[in-house]
Image (cartoon, rainbow, N blue to C red):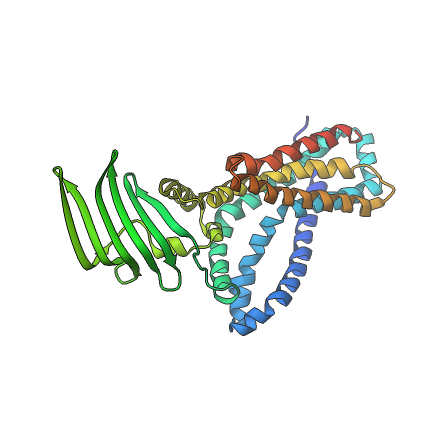
Length: 362
């Protein structure tokens, strides 16, 4: 197959990329209008300035939204301009001129490569810092303060070191029934307990009240009691006060470190981090699958015209996005590992794309 980019290839690439960004502009405009109408009361009530709304929220909301609905934009772009080519008999002319259907897909996949690379770049370098600003704005002006309602909190801080809290108050950063244990083999070598533990921002540690320390040394038990004692451990109030979606603001390196820490701690929120990590790669890859589906569906003239193809495209693209979200439930239910669950939609829709390609007019 000839891989040299020709005039026809440039024409298709230009149409594909142009329609893709045009679809983004239209949908972003519509979404922002609805989002403003929904959140305007919160903005006014909590005193958000116009500059903060535009610069901190919507400027950082756009790349997040673009990437979230990237499959929709890709599919609509392919369906729309390919249907126009088909309705004008341009596809028939290309095939009659000696261009094979397989060769016709070449500029489409080049365009998909550009879009997938663009989406991956957003995922790895643009969206995480943008999400950090957007989520801070959301916590300040839209959502109420996060309240940690978990009870019986257990973490492994390092191999052999465990912390327990009966409950944690997010408003006052106070933990009740605090316990810190060091274990070697099957023996507890040290156990620190306190009625309450208060997070102190001045020294970035915990101040314990009414504590007792029980240590095992040389087959003897040493017991110490006191009113207050300070301790610094690998667990902060911020770790306990973070929303699950905070992982969206971590870059790839920080996300890997967080997953490693959460696994070591036995933190059940690690599944959110793993889902975020695999989604950042699975979502861009969908551009290739949906491009093949779109071309295979819209390369033939239909009685319903472009409208019929766009309707089918919207249904399939939304079903992909919904399935991608639904597949995350398999992770939460511990049915599938995160990487398999997140890649299942791509695997399934790849099979659908292969079938549509097989029955597409050649």
